[in-house]
Length: 240
Image (tube, rainbow, N blue to C red):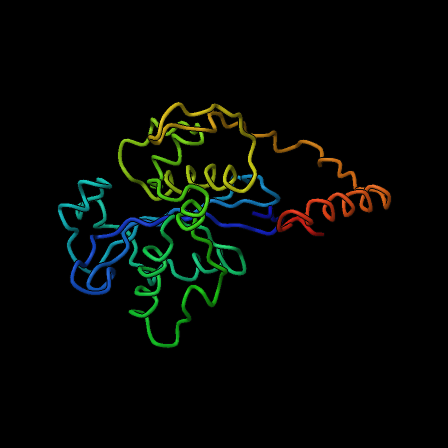
């Protein structure tokens, strides 16, 4: 997976609940949005975080997950009041979420409730789903956020309940690891979900850019010659 230097926003939402008989967002609403910014593979410290007063009561099952209550949200803004601020924060960025269709479905539903003229979130940002990435990296394994933290050695012991900003911060670490972060290898001894990568080390934000050494013409020729030799016995997928 290619690293990118463009602006990336990792985000998460918490909601009033989830519809089980139709579209998962229908009849529900967002109660919290959390987002963090990554530029040049570095967390910038720039964040977006807001609690939102929905137009309905929060399901008890949802409160058990995120701990946000109707009473707590009584004096918070409605989504329409923070819409433009959120759009300004994410506009033009690559938007990263875990099980992205859940969060973007809710976002589009909030947009829809504001009026038909509001664009969908995919018209504003390119969406990347870390759950789909994890399924490709670890086929047949469980790939929820807690499992990925364990797999990559990311400390999430402070995550006693779901929270949009906290989950976005944790997912940002996971995303950086999944797309080429610093790792150390520990071999698994069984068929369970034990980790293979066991540590995360955040690099200093003021570090010098890594030096890139390009192959010489002779090295590229030697590389192609070796691939030609391999190609006599097997398919070659490493052609330049």
